[in-house]
Length: 581
Image (cartoon, rainbow, N blue to C red; front, side, top):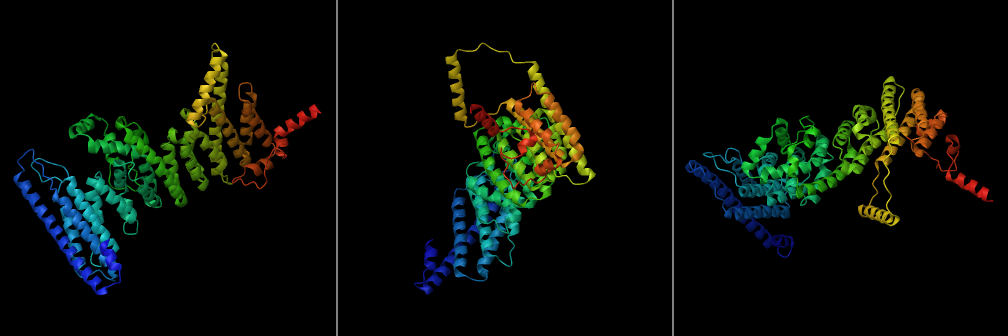
């Protein structure tokens, strides 16, 4: 900052040029010393490995001065970058470029697998210290940032970026200093040069987030906005966000469990699929659109969930924040193929604890691409026919989307799809009717009523509990009623657009009306409305054609109530006033 203030002042231009030259010479000297020190460390490690290979408990000692040397090198590189920026030169000075290229080559050799090995082996070569990886990684980041700001015609910085992600960050992602420097660098340089590397190594960045779930939330919001706009990793990014809690557990097992306990844990896992799952979750590179991702039931049944703790809970909160941002960006640039994969992922990864947001995002995808109702019919029909989700909100939303967005063309294929959905919705209605009939045949045993004082106190406690929760929880009967109501409306919409299924739909409505003794009045009233509405095909098509745009506000005073024979509250109020008069 002092140099910048001196350089930007125009008091004495001659003094400013002399100062810049002196600082450039001094910074180059520091860079040369750092390069010599790194090469000396490489030779020392090789000699120590040769003489101490027979010592079973030998571990390389950590040099405390290496941190000061790295800090001085980073500062010198930043001064050179600032000096070149203030000079406003069109081309990078040759002397500076040669020393920076030499330092980059030395750092690449220092972190190469031939010089260092990550795992400690008795009798083998030396082991990487986390501090050494951190210092070399931070220095490498400063060099990369220098070449991004001042490109050299004789040096390509892309190999150095790949070396940093694959050899430094892959080993030291749990180090706080290296993690902070990396995330800050990635957010600041989301440009054309760094774009392919962020797309390729974004799972490694999520390992950084899993190590520090609440530290980099703001930075990862920006990274998710950037990655969600990249077509090649859009679907894989969604799975990475949803897998963040499990990844947090696996990172803790990999980094913080003792080596013996970790080995016993892996030896106790009998299924090979779980070991493959561990390898997939802690991967460093993106798999693209390959089908190497393990199935979700395997993820749900993996034995690592028993190690969940408070950090896992925090990661779950970060997941909700990131996937909201993901959908805000992804739905703007999503393609039909990606939309198909996202629909399958949302249904497969459905979480009852976050059902509101998931169902809303699913409807958003269907609203953007209504043809997915036909393209994903196998997944949707399987979900509708799943009796285990008879009263699931996901099932209700899918049924509503089928009735709202299924567009019928004059082709036999589309008619067959409509008939498939019509048969599936009929089964749903019949299942709900059977459930209500069984409940009516086996009423609940009445218990002795408590005193009125106790009853009033219980009601007051229930109301207070609802106020504390902040929302009213729907009962099973209310959800079942909602399922049958939405199914009837969906059938009515499909029949209004496809005349061939009108007789079958009217048969379902008649069956509902015949079961009025044990069905809710709301269901019978809705069935009566749909049956009378289907008697007027033109009106039904005008109301339920896709898409539905109504320019006239329909209220209780319109003639639609006369067609469906549903007296409104205004009619009852008018009759009451007439009787009073």
